[in-house]
Picture (cartoon, rainbow, N blue to C red):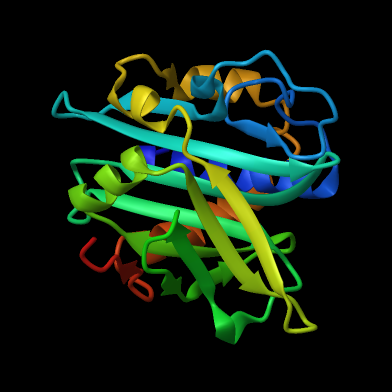
Length: 223
């Protein structure tokens, strides 16, 4: 499996597992935020993010960072950043929210008080809908300086559905050389075998979109 397909598979696996209440990475592990927790957990800001890297054929590193937000153990939303120097669009961000949203409204992304960016939904699976945004170094700097990335969708009653991605720890994890490998991620993710057939179908569908065979993702405006 290529790095691109592996990252898509991991993204879909996490979303599916959390949405259905199946077995997934423990909520105390990196990249998991439980908004309904009643007691403050003793975790560093870097634990808000999971980083996975793989060495490409030319020796360069391709990485993903992701954060998954849950509420009472139920999937609320997620944010993933791909940094792959082998791709024409090196930096790609993917955000997902649960089903039940108004697709024409899209998904609005806003870093703190900056100008919001409305991103169209690219695809939905049985558990969530995802929007993709090609970003640049300026956007990365905005993420580093920011405190919260708010994702806003509309539910079927035309009410705002907000998901807050905390940017605490983003800079430290993004700039760090420390990361899991895909093999380590697969070993930790106990849902891999259960979801293998689903992942193959969904990874191929998203692979076509990410490689330009499908609809191109939106591009972030200048920050």
